[in-house]
Structures are given as structure tokens and as C-alpha cells.
Image (cartoon, rainbow, N blue to C red):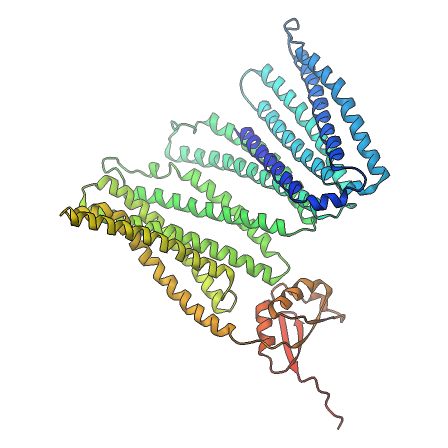
Length: 606
């Protein structure tokens, strides 16, 4: 049920948010002490924690009363009503509301007397934690309400549950709106690093949760459509979960989740994240989502390939493979593929919209070598399983098991080789253009493969040697030895296919890079005609050169159209180092930049 998935994901985010914030509180002791100029940290913690408890008591009391009123209005059995919730609700309100009102009023009074209270880390934590807490409840209860409205069964009970869920959802939404308005009001007054950290955690947590809701909902809709088409195509209406009632139910739950997830995502991602002045957290989150969605898409393709191979090479020779059996698992695999590719291309395009070429360059390195390494991770077990399958068929009569193993090996090999080759070719083209040669991402890729390969080779060689010596001493060296070590022999075969190739490329590039880096760059007097918006590009160029440069603001008409977005810091740095003169001028153009050098001497008048 989609509401249960939403509930689990939202509470997981809330718990993660709480743990991260507590960690930041514990590791920022010196900064907190510098801000506590009007009251002690213990006093602030007391006021905010008691205010939160009072808010919970008041809210639970009001909800208990409202729920009782709804149940009494819709019930015919007035005598059997339980008045326990009424007593609990009134008690909670009588105790909780004064508790919240007094402490919240005291907090606001402290803020009025000294605006520095806005910078309190406890206030920031309270506002954002309450916001994520209330939006979690609001989303959960409103989805539950619409599920009850569109549900089947006892109409009277469904109506009661729906109204109760709507009341809880709207009440939680009201609490969120109250605290979100405070956040928006104080956002322009607070500009501390801690505030932006809490803001990022909240916005990205809810945005990721909304993506989980959207993905789950779209998958329900697509699976319903594809399953319905499958039943119509093959006239198969007896498969569990494919009846018209079940498909209609999945479709309705998908629409509810799609609407709620879209509203959450649009508000927190499109309307608020882009206005955030911090970009580093956004980059990390977007990279992670893009990588995960790309990996899932590749595994979905592997599932489709495996189903096709099972149809061509049946694992059970006694069973007849039909077109209908081929499409049994395809609706789910196609759904996962569509959703993961949509997430991948959207966030990939989001990264490409960065303003600086070298940020795009670094992100390209991350993606290229991550997916290249994933290709190796799939290709290696594919080669190993294929070889192992061949060895098993040569020494044992296990045709049924061997068919299944053979299909698995072919699937891993096909998907892994395609993934590796496509990304490796892209990586090599970038290296030939001088973009990634000697980069940390490329070195990490090679060294990771070498590390894993050497460890696996050492373990496998040790095992093979152990069984060989043992069987020689026991005078049974031969076929029995191969049977005992065939898994480790297969691992060494896989290593022998992958490792030598990468080592040869790495060794050649290492020698080339050493020769390239051995040339000592001379410090030059560099002047760049640029604009103020190019400051980030200038910082990276200075870092690449290793010394400071002179930046002169360019004020001519039309220069605002010149952008550093597609300029390579590495290439411009090489052009500066290779220029003949000691004095260098860099001039931006519409499609690049030109590097001029001069001696610095004035030409005498003729």
C-alpha cells in the first residue's frame, strides 16, 4: 500500500534528519558558545523542547476531540460511544496549550529584545525539525484520506476514516504552514552556515521523499497499464494481481501518490532549492540520485536480457517456452527502466546546467568512471560464471543447472561489456583531448580495479595451491583437483581478461603524464579581460596555474554574452604555460578564449 511506503520513507527521513542535526550540534560547540550572548544554551534548549512538547499535546487533544465529533455525527449508536477520547482531548488541551503558549511567548519576547536570538542553533533546529515532522504527518494522512474515499467495503466506516484522516492531515498541514512562514520570514535575517545546513537537510530530505512517492506511484500506474495490455494481448485473465479490480485499485493509488508527490516535489525542489545560495549539498544529492537511477536502469536492462535468454535457452527442457511466458516479468522490468531513465536524464541535465565548464568536467569524470567501473563489476562475474559453466559441463552431468548458470553468465557478460565499452570509449576520447589525463577520478578507477584484482588473485591462487599440494600428498591429483578449485580457476580467468588490459593502459598513461608534469611551469604575469560573474572560473585558473593572476573588468558592449561555461581551465593553463612571452593577456570570445603574450617592452617611436 502506497501510504505505508510513504509513511516508512518519511519517518526514515525524519529520523535521519534528527540524527544529523544532533551530530552538528555536538560538533559545533565553539560556534554555539560564541552565539549564546543573551542566554545559556541549557535555557534555550529547555524553552524549545517544552514548546514542542506543548504543541504535540495541544495537537493530539484537538484531534481527539474532532475525531470524537465526527464519529458521533456519523454513528447511529450514540449510547455505545466511548467518551475516553473526550476526556483525554480536554486534558491534553488544558495542560498542553498553556505550556506551549507561555514558552513560545517567552521565546518571542527574547527575540524582540535581542534580534541575535535569530541565530540560535536551537531555534533553527526547532523550526526545521517541526517542519519536516508536520509535513510528514500531513502527507501521510491526506494520502490515507483519498485512499479511503476511493476504497471499497463498508461505506460508513470508509467515510469515517476518510474524514478523520482529512482532519489530521489538514491540521498537520496547518502546523507546517505556521512554521514555514516563520522560516520564510527569518530567512532574510539569518545568513549563518548552520542555518543553510539545516535548510539543505530539510529541502533535500523532502525532495528525495517526494521522488520515492512519485516513483512508487508511477510504477503502480505503468504496471497496471502494461499488465492490462498483457492480459488483453494473451487473453490471460487468471494471473494473480491482473484482474480488472486489482488493476483499477493500483491505478487509483498511483494517481493519488502522483498528485501528492508532485506537489511536494514542485514546492520543495522547483520553488525553493533553486533559491538556496548553497550549491555544494545540491551537487552531492543530484550526483547520488543520478548514479543510483543509472545503476537501477542498467540492472533493469539486465533483467530484460535475462528473460529473453530464458525464452531462447529454457532452463527446464521439459517445459515449453511461449511468448506469453516471455512477457510475464517484462511489465515490472520495463516500468523500472522507464522510471530510472527518467530520473537519470532529468538530474543529468540538471548537472549540465552548471555555469562553469570545470564543474561539468568533474561531474563527467564522476559519471563516466562510475559507470565504467560498474561495467567491470558486471563483466567480471559474467566471464567467471561463463567459464565456470563450461568447466562444470566438462566434468559433471548437470545440464539443467548448467543452462541456468550459462544464462546468468551470458546476461552479466552482455550487459557488463556494453556498459563498460560505451563508457570506456567516452573516457578514452576525453583522455585523448587532454581532459582526464592524470585526473583523480581516472587514477581512482584504475587503482580500485588493481586493488580488487590483486586481492582476488591472491586468495584464488592460495586456494588452488593448497588443494594442489593436498591432492599431490594424497595421491589423487587430477580431475578431483580441478573440481575442487574450478570456482577459483574461473576467478583467475576473469582477472586475466580484465586486469592486464587496464594495467597496460595505466602504465603507458603514467609514463606520459610524468613526462608532461615534469616540465616546470614558469610564473608569468597574466592579465585577463573578464567580468565579475567569472570569479569562480578565475579562482580555478589560479589554482591550476599555482600563482595569482590579474583580472581586469571588461566593460565594452556585448561582452555580457561571453561565458566561461564551456571553457577548460586546464587547456587555458596549458596555453599560458606554452606561450612565448613572460607577459600574457587572455581575452574571452563568444566560443572560447585567445591567449596572447608580449615582452612588456614599449616600442620606440619611429
